[in-house]
Image 1 (cartoon, rainbow, N blue to C red):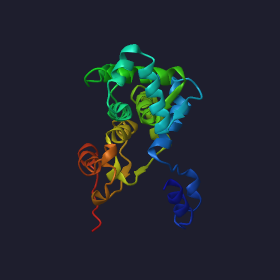
Image 2 (image 1 turned 135 degrees about the horizontal axis):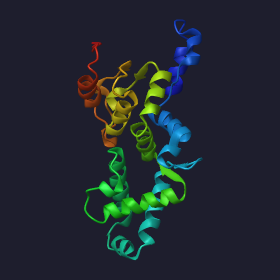
Image 3 (image 1 turned 60 degrees about the vertical axis):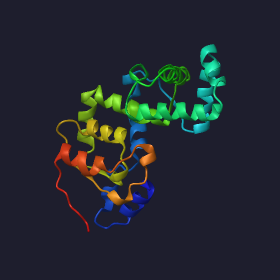
Image 4 (image 1 turned 90 degrees about the vertical axis):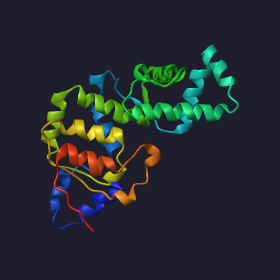
Length: 222
């Protein structure tokens, strides 16, 4: 989708050579750039690798449970171990999308411990999973206001397309990127086309929270 957007702009005579000054990408690719260039500010080592495949993440989770005698016993007690692993992974993703660290996880035991050890394995391998991309990028910006000011000066205008599909983590990332003063931001979306509820997305981030937090001019295209 990002590549198609660039292709359309390149053929727009109104844009012309200005396309070279435009950065186009998904929120995740933008955040990955932040991590790769400034992840050291939150303790990440250079060349951090990304475990994006669910099979890889399940494999790590299985290693976490089988390497601890008590957790291994819990796993063996499950009638459907694979379902239990998938549930653990789903909870971890949910917590990361809410920017909840393992020590603040309020789920019943043993989920907080599993979450913590899962993260420890990733860290020991200088790796992160897909949900960590926004989590660490948010930390870089939230903990370094000078970096926020730098991005505000470099990216003078921000347009978020398909905004009806934003989830909590993505919206909070946009908030911290804009800081307290940056307001040159436009969201484009259609509430009736929100299709990622399974991933925590909700059109309210565009139609309600953005309107409340940024006080934008609203244009309705009927």
